[in-house]
Image (cartoon, rainbow, N blue to C red):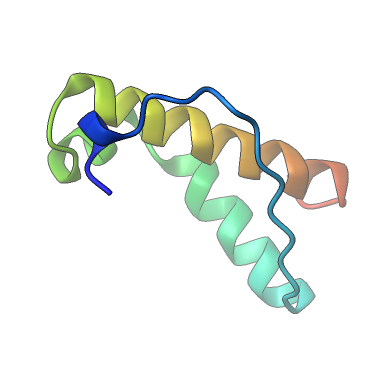
Length: 68
């Protein structure tokens, strides 16, 4: 789906299973990501902001699991 086709603000839940090493590596990757990293891969600023917000949610979940 393209960003323009997603108009719902419905919340979803994602569950992932990974090793501790993978969780740590992902938490470090997300911690180091900056807006410009997402913007280079996004179709527009809104898409980049949504990507960054979603990455923040995953980062928060990893921190709750002890990987911050």
